[in-house]
Length: 143
Image (cartoon, rainbow, N blue to C red; front, top):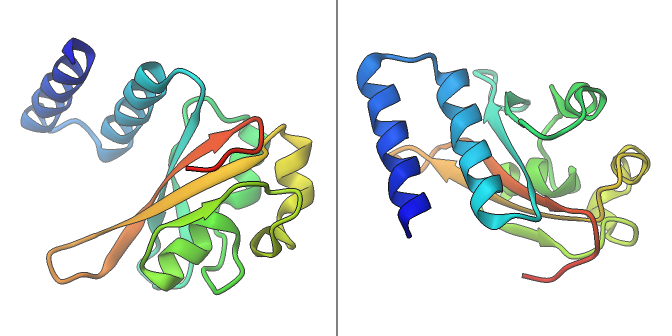
């Protein structure tokens, strides 16, 4: 509980100081990774074009994976994050190696040791998707 409160305080202070969004998102993802312990977090932001997601934060991901998913087109079979943004609902993939949503991205994910990905879209007050928050695991895992 103390780590959550400390993280929340840190985030609020950063917002009050006017820190850049990229820095705030990076700290948010790092705090969640630290608390959860065995996950890798990514935050993707919906591009103004409404059909692509862009890198927001991924503090523990390899740069080559970040480059591979930056600019991903959202859709009904676009991995966990692209599908979550498209459906406007959480997508939980227990095993990237066998899930059809990952057919086009499976090789790059597995090459980076990623086996499960749970993604949740976040929205504005009007219900429009702004981006996705994802938790990756290095072994198959159900929520």
